[in-house]
Amino acid sequence: MSSILNKAAPALRPFKLALIQLGNVGADKSVNLKHARDMVLKAASAPTTGSKVDLIILPECFNSPYGHTHFPVYAEEIGYKHGEEYDVENTQSESVKMLSEVAKQTGTWLIGGTIPERCPATNNVYNTCTVYSPTGALVASHRKVHLFDIDIPGKIKFKESETLTAGNTHNYFDTEFARIGLGICYDIRFPELAMTSARKGCHLLVYPAAFNLTTGPLHWELLQRARAIDNQVYFTMCSVARDLTAGYHAWGHSMVVDPMGKVIAQAEEDEKIVYVDIDPEVFDYARDGIPVTKQRRFDVYPDVSQGVQQ
Ligand SMILES: NC(=O)CCC(=O)C(=O)O
Image (cartoon, rainbow, N blue to C red; front, side, top):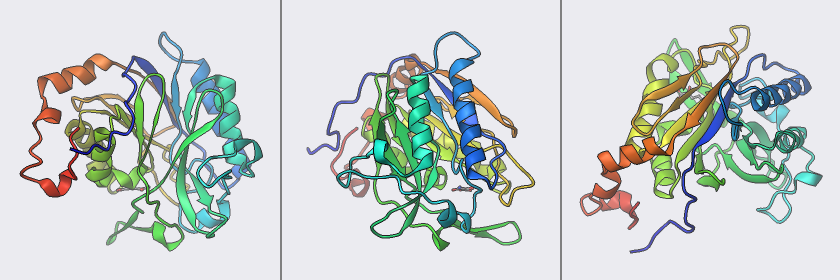
């Protein structure tokens, strides 16, 4: 049987992550970048408990206001060397420069939320997450695959596709402590993406996000717990803080859910750094006790199996 596991995942080890529920994201990009940088430095230097922080996560659209009219205005070229490989040293992107430098300065892995990215070849704009190693190398990226186009009459209408193009790749990366799968906000509504990450061996799925005040109360926690349980992985969404003076009102409530579906950390609405210790024993406890990863019946639903076993 063919396998999509192209490389063995590293073993899951205990590690500490910090979610930055960033506040005060306004119109001035340089102010946003400075504030994000200061908060990354703060997150790295002030864990509330014990060990050093290994992974820091920023929210969706942390360098610009969130809205389809803003994306093309704030979009930056990330910079590619040979199509696929990133060239951080020569990047024109002030956001990428800041994120790379602060990852190196703090010596932590950094999931740099998302920024509007312009592709120079096509002029397309994407909602893109970039990831940095502790040496400042840009090691992975994810362009939002499912664009946030919804219309709930009298409540919320939003159409990212007015100015954004959808990404078309699935993405994950390896650290010395876990394999981590990437998605962005609305991507969570498509269980196939999370399932693909889990079946590729990811232990933690990270989705920078910014839900709203209509869907947030109903779906924010439910979707994360669902994705965590059905894949038996750690799951987290990191949001911007709520700002009722902004054009888009984010739900906040940045959260981490364990593989049993338990919410193990959560912010309220305001700016906050949330620290969480990831425990491999919970991962094994879930998978040993409820062994769904070994009980799938791809013979009954071959259309979703593509011949792949987890
Ligand atoms: N930024 C987003 O993709 C928002 C998604 C959202 O609010 C939802 O309900 O889904």
